[in-house]
Amino acid sequence: MAFNSLPLSLTELPGAVPVWQGQAPAADLPDICQAVKDQGGRLAALWGTDEQDRGEGYALHLALAKPEGMLWLRAALPASAPQYPDLSPIFYPAGRMQRAARDLLGIDADAADRRAWLRHAAWPDTEHPLQRKIAAATVFEPGTDDYPFVSVVGDGVHEIPVGPVHAGTIEPGHFRFSIVGEKVLRLEERLGYTHKGVDKRFQGMEFTQGAKLAGRVSGDSTVAYAWAYCMALESIAAVTPPARALWLRALLLERERIANHLGDLGYLGNDGGLAFGLAQFMRLKEDVLRLNHRLFGHRYLMDRIVPGGTACDLDHGGLAAIGRECDALEREVRLLKDIYDDHSGLQDRFLTCGRLTPSTANKLGVIGLAGRASSQIWDLRAQAKPAPYDTLAADMKIHKNGDVAARVLMRFDEIFESLRLERAVIERISPGAIAAPLPAPGAGKAGLGWAEGWRGESLIALEAGADGRIRNCHAHDPSWQNWPALAFAVFNNIVPDFPLINKSFNLSYSGCDL
Image (cartoon, rainbow, N blue to C red; front, side):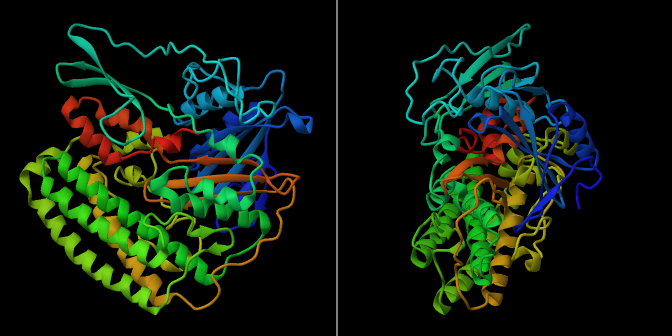
């Protein structure tokens, strides 16, 4: 057991990845978190739930990750004083998660930074939308919004505000630069402008509808979120999908990874002054999306993963088409990689730009592609190994320089590895059913899903209610961990390099706005 050295009584949950569940007093959380960190673990997610309808108060939930598995820890908080110790000195990403939990639920960490994170002026600071007494359709009177940005003072220092509305179709986010000349002294981010209400929307949903919503938390990671949700539901139901469905899920996940990496490589080339790269990589991405639509019925693969299995299958012709695509993609991407590597102007923009050292990345808890570009060894496909990755033997790609160049190389490496995995799937996939029936989930049962998407790990924590519907569902995006790292990567760079550095991370606004 990955967490057997902790003074906790733990229950192992059934499911595709190793997850242990336990309870602890809130006062013990710093010691437990420090012990997990000392053993090489990290904070995967932090959120809260309202338990007052059960005659209790609130609950603080922590997902603590080690390479061997996940600890889902619950701490009861009294309704009269729902407070708990600040965990951000141990796990840096906890800071924003604690602020979000305070905005949404009213539970409060004993932290130095109590500024609103998701609230803005959408509701008064006395209201907390995730409390069960507040209906999902409630319309609030606007609150006040006098967000106290951190000021940097000194000779020649001035500020550049950017956003929240941007010159494109991306979601809103505000960036406040403190600069001298063109050098960035500090970047402060403010997100959470769209107020989607995802966690509230999940409550009371039918489980099959919940799968659709999970796939729309962050649209470019629909496969990862849908798989994580179904993994959590299948854990509750103690159901294992058929082998063919699992092979198909892996195929869909790798296709999502390839499509996103192709798009990013094109935009990174364009931001570095090579418009040719944008044209070529977007052409390749479009080919992948068109084949997705022809074979699976959706360009971005939404609703292809469903509880119990998949909603799509492939015949021999479809498998052969993917094999031909793999050969063509590998040939063209290798040629384009040579062009990127040999283009001196592009390399001048990439090398040393936006560097995040391995030690800083470790302290910040950076995960996913951005973490692996800074020597952070986290990839669920190679560590937790949900089937069929337990037999595919995914090769985790790692770079150490942590700059834009390293994040570009990570994308090339992962495309080639995903093509290898696609070939392995189409060679080894076995005939059979693509879905298994799920019994009605038992009231009070909980499950956790954990999938390595292209950006990093998507996490879903799911709990069944007494009415055969969802009681609670929390979705967590890897961007929660990685947005703070962007501010560190931009430090001491020049303002014109920010778009390039930002794109090299390519984090989700929507995944952090629940």
